[in-house]
Amino acid sequence: MPAALSLCWTPMFSSRLPRSLRPNPLTMALVALRTSGAAWIDLTETNPTAVGLDYPPSILDPLANQDARRYAPDARGLHVARVAIAADYARRGRLVSPGGIVVTTSTSEAYSMLFKLLCDPGDEVLVPQPSYPLFDLLAGLDGVALKPYRLIEQDDWSLDRRTVIEALTPRVRAVLVVSPNNPTGSMLREGDWAWLAVECGRRGVAVIVDEVFADYPLAPRPEAASPSGREEALTFSLGGLSKSAGLPQVKLGWIAVGGPDALVAESLDRLDVICDTYLSVSTPAQIAAPALIAGGAAIRAAIDARVRRNLGVLREQLQSRPAMTFRDPEAGWSAVFQVPAIEPEESLVLRLLTEARVLVHPGYFFDFGREAFLVVSLLPSPDVFDEGLRRVLAAIDRTEP
Image 1 (cartoon, rainbow, N blue to C red):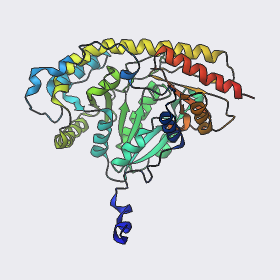
Image 2 (image 1 turned 180 degrees about the vertical axis):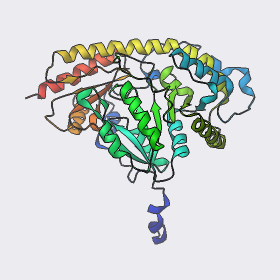
Image 3 (image 1 turned 60 degrees about the vertical axis):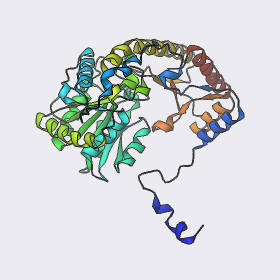
Image 4 (image 1 turned 45 degrees about the vertical axis):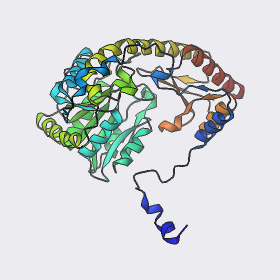
């Protein structure tokens, strides 16, 4: 390699991307297993189209609507889509104006738009721990720094207000709330939401609320909050068809903007500029939104039944194992259980994959504060879930002291 090329190779790429793309040991073990051709069970599968659910054969027919042949983009999203989304909020008891909705291709894109709206490079956003690891990459790609605040395990993953206050520096532009949380399934409490809205409002900090699993309540606490309807803080609520209708392939999400009227209006004007720059949402998906949202009800019911069934099996199996700790999730598609910390999580999940031929997520993927936690999806088909769980628990039982 020429010397000049060698010298410029590293700075050629953006620091927004991870410095190393080397796969972690679990990924390398999974690649080796796939290469070997051995059969294995995936208890991390969260793609609803890949777990044997019955989708109506005509569910995607609305994408062929002839009105979609005409391209007449609206930066905020076509009116027909925004009206349908507002009506879907009303189904859940939320009053959201179509004018306060911005259509996106996905929740991930919604995060990127909001980081562009709220943050300069180097500004900060608070994120919960534990929570979904995708936030690190999403923030990094927009030059945003993440700062953690904790959820209190001993109090059913409630908001740790002390850690929020400690993290609220002058460079913080938003607090990210995931309710229902992924993977704990916990939901923000009404008292915590009222407190957070006041604290953020008086500091000029926005609140971003990820509600993608809101359509899958399992056993919510009476004090569980719907993070809306407060005027103290500028609030952005995120949703999409990927979870609410089990249609990740359609690529349709949204942002609902709430809070003080003046800030809402100014936010929407600026989001118009961002969205108009990209115009990324497809016309067929927006034209089809009313029918897709309506048709998604059947898929949502099938997902709900699957999740509840598998959760019941998991609960029953863990009841006979006092050395393992399990809290029922309030909502969502995932379950977390704690196992005896007789070996590091990474070692445990590698052993489960290589010996039991079952893939599960270790807790450290989600920034749990201690070991040992395992995270499983509740979406796999019953036969796959039951066999995978049987193998996991049998392998752990054999190694308990």
